[in-house]
Length: 180
Image (cartoon, rainbow, N blue to C red; front, side):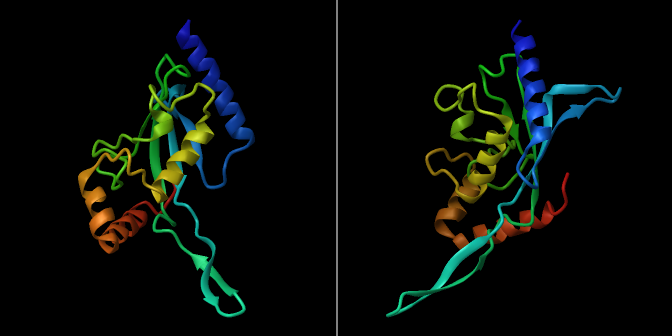
């Protein structure tokens, strides 16, 4: 019976996604070789977060600000992510994986994402949607969580050599420049 609940919920998620989803994101169930759809595995693309207007200079004494676009290091990349749902969904969260070797402090070398809302014992709630998961992962790219680090090299570089960390992130963004 649980499998029926999972598939029904995922069918509703797909329907809601088609009606309204964040710009630049892709999320669709896997298509099998025979043309059927596997609702239990979704192939997704997460765009690197766009830069935004930020104050670049403060002019004293008038407190006049000059604004400009500050790009994020992840901008320009379209990152492939797979959501793997179990028959226990939505009671249990999906497994979210980037390609093996993905460079980020909160992504294991296997590609598994370490994100609080995906922790089945502490952060997961059955009401969390696919959209919320994908936006949460996008936010995690820009704002690593130092409380749940998963991969040594990115962690070390982020804290000890920020310039090299940024360089590696920008290289990865170039590697994933087209939508999957």
